[in-house]
Length: 204
Image (tube, rainbow, N blue to C red; front, side):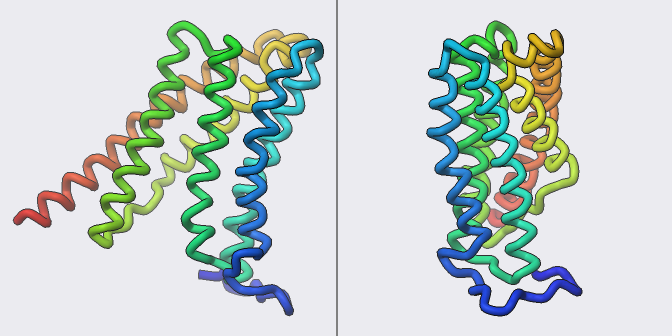
């Protein structure tokens, strides 16, 4: 539903494949190989900084595409489908590359595993609940989890390059990653409870 007081710009198509909100979503998907390629720049720090800025741009585009889709009444089926997919893909790619290059290592790998497993679990539960025509709204805590997770990954992408400017860059990112993992477990449990509640209702 469009926000009150914000008119749809003249000539802007509503909910089409090539609308600006959808283009921003496509851009996040196309940013994934660019982010991965940054890790292959091993002779200079600018690869890490570029990866961080690509990820930040993706996060900003995630906010903008949702806001513009509502403000301009451009919600579309393809946008609703691709938006969460794009978010999960770029987070998964970032975590995998951070693990591959040792920024996330040892016990901290568990935090990354928890986050990835939760994303897969929630996607499956949403698909299942969709067959029951049941919608589970995103909670405020889940939104905060996403914010903490994105900030953590941003710091970790800077990683060793960031440590040269602020020695605690990687440590701060790992701390936030664990906080995000804990919030992930809690919010994932909420989805499980909602699913079981509807399953039990269906069987009664």
